[in-house]
Length: 124
Image (cartoon, rainbow, N blue to C red; front, side, top):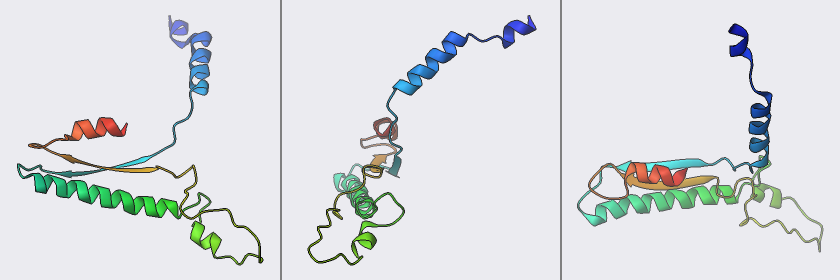
């Protein structure tokens, strides 16, 4: 019986590996969830939303300056180019590797939507 427990179905393993290889790899992302208690006052709840929006903008600005090679595009664009050369790299266009790599959301513990579980599900 000991040999039975060690035997694995090679077809099952290889088919699982094939499925994994066929699925497109998802780009890793960082999800940041800002949480407050929640309030009956709408303005209080909107305040957390505005902080999340500002923080998302902050991360977008950082990532827009990052070209994925370990240096910022502004550092790369500061190099002197010969006259008439056309530098097509735009500081406003992030690398595909970092575009959307950080997602910032807000949730409330109770009283007001969205709830923590709802937002966590949306981040997955």
